[in-house]
Amino acid sequence: MKTLASTQAILKTASSKTFRGMGILPMSCWIVTHGQDAHATGAIRKSDGESMFSAEKLKRMSAGLGKLGASFCAAIISMLCLSHAACQAAGQGERPIVATASGKVEGIQTKNGVLAFLGIPFAEPPKGDLRFMAPVEVKPWEGVRDATKSGPAAPQPAAPLDPAAKFAQDEDCLNLNIWTPGADGGKRPVLVFIHGGAFVAGRSGEPLFDGANISKRGDIVFASINYRLGMLGFLYLEDFGAEYQGSGSNGIRDQILALRWLKNNIARFGGDPGNITIMGESAGAMSVITLMSLPQTKGLFRRGIAESGPLNWLRTKKEAASLTADFMEICKERYGVTDVAGLRKLKPEELIDAQSDMFAKPGAQIMPRMSMPVIDGTVIPKEPFAAIQDGAADGIALLNGTNRDEYCFWIQFKPSLQSEPLADFLSEIPWLGRNLGDRKQEVLDFYNKRNPTPGPEKSSIASSVAYATDELFLVPQIKTSEAQSKHAKVWVYRFDWKAQAPNKEFLNSCHALELPFVFKSFDPDDEMVGPNPPMGLSDAMQDAWISFARTGDPNHKGLPEWPAYGPARRATMIFDTKSKVVEDPDPEVRKLFQDIPL
Image (cartoon, rainbow, N blue to C red):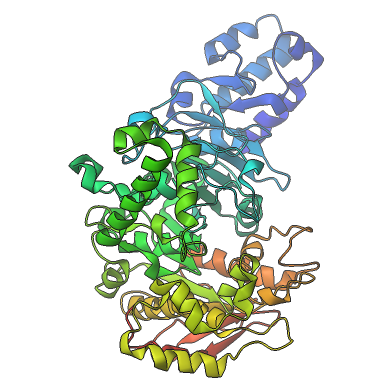
């Protein structure tokens, strides 16, 4: 590396008016292309896309420049002959370029020095004849692709807390982002994030999910991926022809293809393809557990982190077919469309409008199950929880957790949840209690006694909110953790810190509240966290996630000892301003649901 250091020193000297006058940019504007093609051709290019200079041409340019010119060109040639890792290290700067198997991408250096490569496509645009079909690997591109800003999000309806008009949307949404301390050949742990949003909303380019901080703090490579959403990603069409097998889980297919792309290319960004951890929140966490259960993902990752994953939301083929029939009826009424050919002619926004009509139906406005993945026998061959029980994820370590008051999040959209009786709530959304059977009255009595109608305290929890939190989040987490602990190490957490924003006491420790702590991406205008969040809690959580990605164990010096989860102790890390380990923190709920199917 001494050669590299001396070379860079010479190049810095060469960043002068004389060389600029000859068309040679200062060092800050030179980028060494990464990959074997650069080594073979001895090529170097300007970051603005101007012509390449071969080593031979640089020799000729040195004629007549004297000792300094000869030294300069010798330095360039020396750099071109360095090892692959050295070439990558030399290429780091404000506009780094990496040569992937798909083509070259030009990123940007973030404020904290991390390199960011954003909006990299991993699949062909799923438009036209590719709409509703399995994703197709992206075709290699010529030249250098700009990767300095996030790509479009999947088409989606406007959301009350994140209006769709705020960001670009396009069916050409299958892109990913990478943050790395250095595209230098280092074998860093890789953490891949899958966003949530009930499979109908969300995007990897959300500022909340900026990976620069966690990449810098942990010296890891961080990536995030997009996937198709709503009816464009999960419309079950198998009844329209064999060519549509698996269409009800195309969004999961997108995730798998993105992971394959990362597996094949992450070494070029300084990551270790043999040490990949996938993580997700909400629908992203549900995706993590689902991906762990699939035979086609073997070897793509080593570990999983699931934050608040409701594993009991998947649809059966019968449920999916029924919902598709309802959707087609709406499309017939709206647009006169009766088949897939007609659906392909509709604009994305027209499909989203029809989808919104579906969501407006009674019982669907809070939990839009019509867009959940399908246990179809093709993409998802078996119910994921059953597959986990049978050892489908054998050897895959899991960090699994929930927030204490998950369902309080939805009070923002339906304030009556603060006082709605549980019986009325289950009547409104009957699928939430579909598995209670003859235990329904017992369950109603339990929650009505434990969580009576709230009094004047704004932070009190109604029985309906408490039940939904447990049935959708806590119980699936407990059962999944217990099942996976028989096949690999599992660590369990619960996030208890409460929202501090003014007039938001009702949020308590709600769904998604942990995310800015994991990413350390606090927004001063955040309407949930509030001012002055505890940075110590963020450090503790971020370091746990980093440690788990690095070694498969979340323990670190900033936390009390955190034992792996098992049926004997059920050790659970309670994350709060003063974190602690509690054994079996919710025994009554666990025992109540022990014999009730997910």
